[in-house]
Image 1 (cartoon, rainbow, N blue to C red):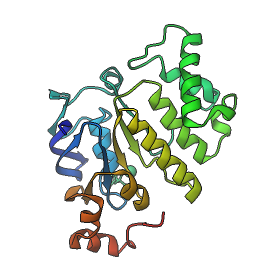
Image 2: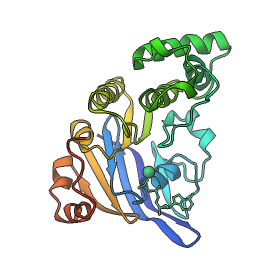
Image 3: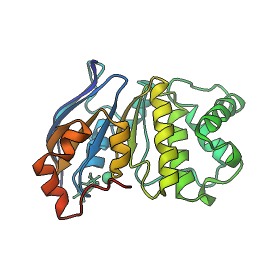
Length: 247
Ligand SMILES: Nc1ncnc2c1ncn2[C@@H]1O[C@H](COP(=O)(O)OP(=O)(O)O)[C@@H](O)[C@H]1O
Ligand SMILES: [Mg+2]
C-alpha cells in the first residue's frame, strides 16, 4: 500500500499555545486510518490543517506526492478530498435533499443544473439511508441524522479521500453500528478514509492503523491492538477513563 497522504512535522500555535507539535504521519491508499487522543489533543486542528482550514505554523502536507501545504479549503474538493465537521454544519433552512445536492456542485461531479444535482443527491440519500428524510429541513433533524447528513454532503463531491471528525459522537449503540457499516461501505467503494473517533469499538472494527495524539504530539502509532496495549497510551487515558471500548 502506498501513502496517499503524508504529513511532515506539522505544527500549529494559537497565540503562543502549541495545539499541534511536530506531527508526522501517513495514510495509505484504500485504507481506513484512525486518529484518537483525549479532548484537546489537537486532532481536529490536525484535520483542519490537512484540509486547508488553517495554514500550518510549520510543516508540510503531501497528497498523492504533491505538496498541498497552504492550499485553501475550496481547492480540496477538486482534488477529490472531502471532510465532515465535528460540529455539524448543515444548511439549516434547506431540505436534506438540497443539502446533499449543494455538495454535488463542487468536487468532481460539478453538477450543471439543480435537477442534475438533485439526481446525484437522490442516489446518495439512498446509499446513506436518508431517503425517508429527503424533504425534512436539516435544522429539524436530531444529531444522528445530522451526522449522517454531514457524511452524505461530503460524498456528494465524489471524493476519493474522506476525513471524518467524530462522525459517531452522540450516537446510541445501534446508530453507531449503522455508522460503522456505512463507513465500511464507503471504503469498499474505493474511498480512502481518515477518521477521528472516540468510540474505540468503531476504531477497532474499522481501522488498520491508528495514530494517537496527546498534548499536540503523536505519542503512538500502530494497529488498534498495538496502541491500546501501549503503556504510555494507557497512562494517558487512565486519568480520563480507559478508551471507550463499549462505545
Ligand atoms: N481556533 C482556535 N483558536 C485557539 N485555540 C484553538 C483553536 N482551535 C483549537 N484550539 C486549541 O487547540 C487545542 C487542540 O484543540 P483540538 O484540535 O480541537 O483538539 P481535539 O480535536 O483533539 O479535541 C485545544 O487546546 C484548543 O483549545
Ligand atoms: Mg476535535
